[in-house]
Figure 1 (tube, one colour):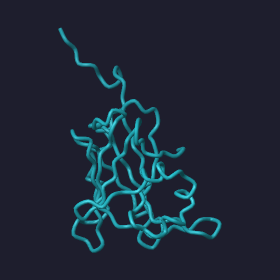
Figure 2 (cartoon, helix red, strand yellow):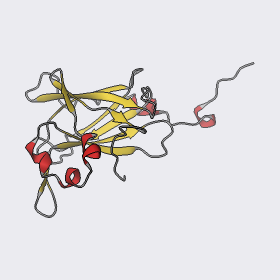
Figure 3 (cartoon, helix red, strand yellow):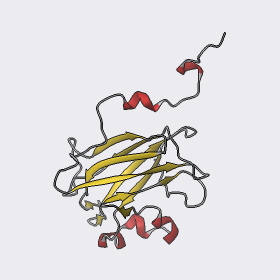
Length: 173
C-alpha cells in the first residue's frame, strides 16, 4: 500500500502556501498610466526552468519613497519557470550620505535547494542614473550586466540564473 508523504515528512519548502491569497503580482492595474510589465524566468545552473520557485519584489514609488501601501509583490513561477509583475518604475531613492540610487526593484527568489532566499536588484535599461549608482559602480562589468533588465515587447524581462555561467549577481540578505 503506497502512502503519500505529508509535508512534515518531506523536504520543503512548499511555496504554494504563500500563494493561496489574492494575486499579489499586480502592484498597479495593467492599463494604469506608467504601468510596466516586469517578467522573466528563474533558471537553475543548467539553464533549466525552476517551476516551483517564488519571486518577491520590493520597490519605492515613482517619487523614490518606500510606502506601506505600495511596492511589494509576490509571484510563483509556472512550468516554464516564468514569473510576471505589473508595476511602475520607481524613482531614485535617497542614500543616507545624501546621494541617490538609480531606480531599481529589489528581488528575492525562494527556491528548492536554497536554505535562504537569494537577493538581487533589477535595474532599468538605458537609465542615465545607472552610471552613478554606488552598487552598480562597485561591480565588474559582467556582474553589472546580470542586474539590468532587457526591453522586450514593450515590457522588461529579467531572468534569474541561480548558478553557473551567467549567474545573476546576488547580495547578502
